[in-house]
Length: 302
Image (cartoon, rainbow, N blue to C red):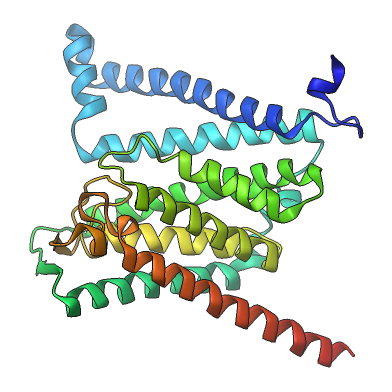
């Protein structure tokens, strides 16, 4: 019976670790959500009409997006910290969440690659005539700052969970690329309940998961995929106004897709075939870069 839960090295099996992580994060999210909206209710005097007012707080308005992302990030951070301390006996740096002082170059590099990828996708779609883009005059600096805050948290949360903890938990099997594939499938399935979901969107999110994993394995830390993740989401939504993984956004520009297969339609750029091609090309460029960098290092050291 013990073998069901523990492997031959005396470690809790990867599947149980991931299950506990996800279930625990969900439970903490529920608890923090209740506390947050209860406090908001008290502050606003909403307890006189709790059902109606709480519904409006949770389901309407952009503030809900910022509050939810804060709660979700904190829940993930707390649960990973608990798993590392009590189950894995590790620290955050052991799963690639190193000092920003050591990883800021990778963070900047990832951010620029992600932003450039979105710009290229939008330009291709615009040239092909399958998307119309209009300037949006009703966007404030306040809105853009809060959007960056929200997507910084999303990038940190999803990379800490998917590339940081889950890959390392799966690495107990001793097959790194199997860990990459399984973690990327989990990463994709985490979006399966998103609005306007399409199969190509799930496939592209899986491919992005593989790309992020490759960045993580090659750099030895999470900062490059974190940077890419932040700018990928932010430029889609808050710059060009596309839906982000099915979630509606307003940007400096408003995008109106005309061809779902090429542009992703209501799911956003991640649901289009042009994005598939750009992800694959980005992978090849990074492969060339990392292989070339490794050879240069070998020459310098050798």
